[in-house]
Amino acid sequence: MATYIYVAVAGDQKLLLFDMEPDTGRLAAREEYPLDGRSAAICIDPSQKTLYLSVNTDPTVIVSYRIDQLTGSLTQLGDVEVGGDACFISTDNTGRFLMAASYGAGMVSVMPIGDDGVAHGSVVDYPTAGLAHFIQTDASNRYAFVPHVDKSNVIFQFLFDEKTGLLTPNAVPRVEGHPGQGPRHLVFHPTKDIVYSDNEQESSVTVYHFDTGRGTLAEGQTLSTLPEEGFDGENSNAQIRIHPTGKAIYVSNRGHDSIAVFAVDSETGELSSLGQQPTESVPRPFNIDPDGRYLFAGGAATGRVAAYRIEDSGTLDPLEVYEVGDTPSWIEPIRFD
Image 1: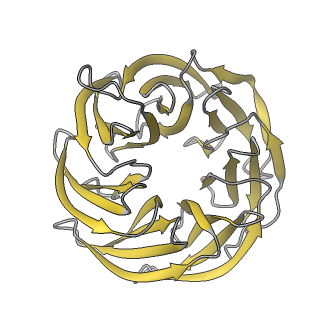
Image 2: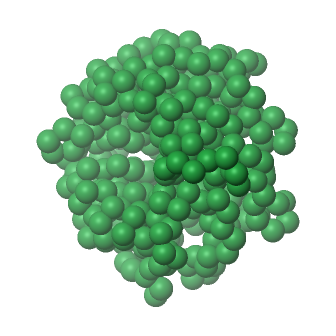
């Protein structure tokens, strides 16, 4: 079994490959891939054969890389232009389509993936609203969700056709955020009909009940990602991650410079705060290794990645810190058995 960590470094226009030691979480830098622009987001297809990376050139492109499943090394296959800035990318659950949410353009795109692993021109470019920040299908691959931050403050709900790649507004096409919320990213509970959102402007996390028959979300519990006392500065949330077992939720606080940790109730899926773990300044990207043993958080302001051991309770125990370069933008782990 081998685990690798890919780190996109926007300011230095490079993509890094690290080996991860499974017993300690220690990272060893192994390869560096130069880019032609600032990196934004990474995703890996379900077969773990291809890595996709959005690069903000003019225009933005999504680059496809073949993954060597013995070593984690990458070979560039090609790229495709996308009609926006592609701040978030994902594949559908079949691996036949690549999806992109474009923040500046306020739209989502769906692109077919060829047998060679390279994405091609869009099946659809669908205007949504300004500041689109995420797109992903649910486990059934029948529905897709697109949160929007700040003044748009909404989650778009789509029907997704996995044969054609087309998106159709659901019967309930939008979930409006409450004032000042700003839903940014979503994660799906691995076994429950629950979806969690981090809210960029409100510095909070929301529990949504997911109607899997209709493909709609209903807002439930919302908790702050900040401590109750002792902080009155500016803050915004960046990413949200869920532990592979579903036992904990993590959200990065930019301003408080911490990872907020929440325990997940095994019966209801509701959250209770376990506090905030201090981390690197402006922690935009972070991720969890596939076995759920370690969390890695990148500081956009420090150019470092901090590693943590995940305890049984879900809390974080600091390990080592690694220099990676100017403005890490994404962290993506992969494991091969």
